[in-house]
Image 1 (cartoon, rainbow, N blue to C red):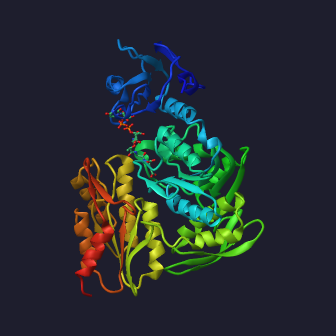
Image 2 (spheres, protein in one colour; image 1 turned 135 degrees about the horizontal axis):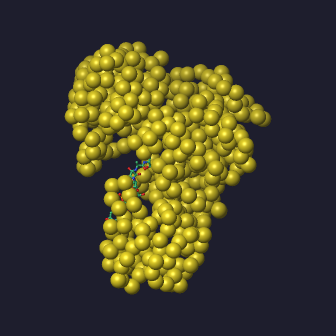
Image 3 (tube, helix red, strand yellow; image 1 turned 120 degrees about the horizontal axis):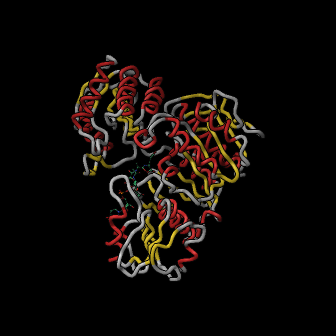
Length: 490
Ligand SMILES: CC(=O)N[C@H]1[C@@H](OP(=O)(O)OP(=O)(O)OC[C@H]2O[C@@H](n3ccc(=O)[nH]c3=O)[C@H](O)[C@@H]2O)O[C@H](CO)[C@@H](O)[C@@H]1O[C@H](C)C(=O)N[C@@H](C)C(=O)N[C@H](CCC(=O)O)C(=O)O
């Protein structure tokens, strides 16, 4: 492809060389560079891509896009731009010929609920015999093929490549989880969204966004990028704030909710452990919905999916079937083992709010104790301390017994994490035991449980590894729980 076509719309200064040439690919990682390619140097959080320019040139890069005035005696073209992440997004969209112009792209953002809503929507579209791809926490799924990805929302170059692959596979719809990181780091810039969905906002990722206002503003960007529908949770305070802003946009605002006035609402809700039945009220009809997951969270999450499908023209009977066909979602209140009232459940809850919702959902169905296994991922900043405090408060007040352990400590000192969690549990008079080794913590919870107890293993959900330092160790909590159960007699 001609370099000039790829650079269309980009503001740049030519530092050296010629822009009239052919290029074959783009890379933002020097290790992926091929001959005759563009290398985009990104100033990262941990390393600086500008330090890899020489290695990119050695591997065959003929064009370098950088944020600084780079000098080299090599025969390459150097372009300087203000923001290389934004430039990467633009040239990637140009390179793949703006695939989102031809896709029905649905973006979903918010702290919790993104994955389950995308599974509900996927199921509804499949019921409607409409092809739909998925990009999110669990990976990228195109035509039932799962491609593992590092981030919930991949880097712009990878995204545009996935969108182009979807068109090649005749997939017309794509449901994408859009993280606040992706919005802030321009991963989704130059993508065209038909619909945006907002779930809720509670403290998370504050190491990147500094405070809740910044976190909200990052999420709010998605709703400036949509063409048709903005679908917003009216029960969430930040949702109401967003709806108030979005109502003046050129797109149509749709609200969903249980407790507040909304365009798509749920009434007559009947909860049980294995499913929830409710009436969904749309502007044209009211029908019964059966969700095969417990609690109010999944009523709200299914309402978001119903709103999205309804306003995208899918008949209500098809929506009903689509929701009903979701039999469970990996790592989302996933029942690993159940015998009468005894249950072992794995859930992704790793924030104060999500943990409270998970325990409150289980409480009405627990005949015995709720034994919670959880860990906190946080640092010693003000926000980090708030997270230790908040999660410990929830554990102390809502669970009967907590086994505190490690989640993914990553680069944080495991001893410091345990110490902070213990101190926070003490502060809230929690009943707890501390076992840093997560496998031993799960085994202990199973060993001390009685026949009516509910064990909630919270934090990792669908994840299959534990990250300690720079090591990513295979970790299967379902297997650990089942092995411990096999050895146990009640
Ligand atoms: C903090 C953060 O967002 N980091 C992201 C960021 O990494 P970074 O800026 O630190 O990149 P880096 O590793 O320092 O490298 C800088 C540049 O040098 C390049 N490089 C590096 C080494 C080399 O040999 N050659 C080379 O060219 C890298 O490719 C990169 O372009 O840019 C990378 C490329 O896009 C991302 O993969 C990476 O996500 C890391 C893995 C991450 O954990 N991100 C999390 C915080 C995140 O984004 N999470 C959200 C989910 C949140 C949710 O679920 O709610 C997500 O969307 O996944």
